[in-house]
Image 1 (cartoon, helix red, strand yellow):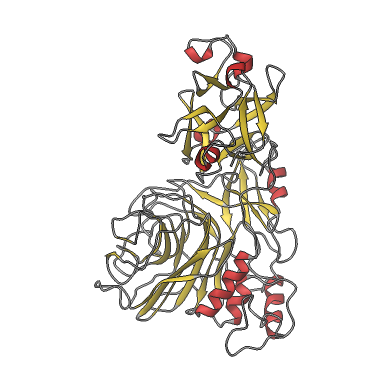
Image 2 (cartoon, one colour):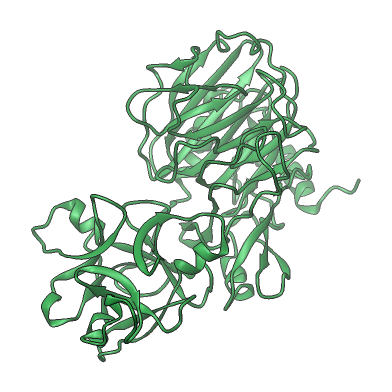
Length: 516
């Protein structure tokens, strides 16, 4: 087999000592810093620590300093054509502009997440399994926009029903062999379904018994295990058990986490495993558990099979949701020092949700102000009591929660990239969408209709002020407030909110600086 050019360069860098540098937070014990590599990725750090990556997946950046291949592939809805999305420069960030150009005026899904390790452990559409049929849905390529290293990028938004897998891998741990893994996730996008995982799973897509998995899990399900508070928790899916520590069920050492960007790690070796996590934007890692295998039969020794999953359980349980930005799996049990250096590398990326304020440019944070004479102090807000969307007054003396409820992040349209979608600024992964013509704030599902319901095309305001927002799938209807509730409404019609009275004013909105 021919070795990829980028991998030959990466190996040469290691041989010459360029990767044996101070590992972001300090030099590993037993190593000596030489010259600083121009670019260093997490997998260079793992290799220097003696636990090389055997799978490396990211839609936001290269995970090796010498990687210049594709990160992922997208398929567009208009003609089913596909294209690979690569990096802006060797070892750099995703070329999101290539996706925007290819997917212009239509929508795209992510079909492949390429393995950067050179072992071919690519993640593709998951097939049916013991828990659910298939193939699984593919992630909307526009549902998880992010800023990484100051550049626009896109993560992998897993709605219930979405899943990726590779059952025929190379180099992934089997049996009781040691391994480590991390994932950078959206810490605000989770649920109590089963199971949002990334890691090692069964090759048969069925539940083959205790100890046949070892994967990072993130969510707040309490069926098998949980920690303190109400969640969400980072746990380890080891099959027939989500473990927060040595015990089945409750373990006091595993706290609820609230970081918008989360680094979650699991590692295991014979008789030993650990959970670690930290804020992916700043600071270090905390160890939530490190010790003996679960005190339940079947987990010592482990029986890992070496498949890789993302967004699903080992048997294709696909009832959960979450967002993935990057992750790797290693050969060998990484030291805490190595993982600490990887965390420093991750925080240096500068993951954030927005870039700019007060405009309809994707990535900007805004508030939408009503222009009707009655309501010029009112803004589009999500109701704190339910998921309905209303207009309500916001002032400088309003609470921080009220201000955040009236703030939105502008994204390229989920169903039409030339239009727009609006994600809540304080409810990660949840979007404005209409249902039965009324507006709600809800997470996405895996259907095209749902994406259309959350897509709006801006036009000049009907009353000459600001903008009006046309429904993508009901082009005669626009965002309108009526009796302080927000709908998609036409200019005259059978519904009360279609009243022609004040329609031009009620469908016109000023795009303001965000309140929160």
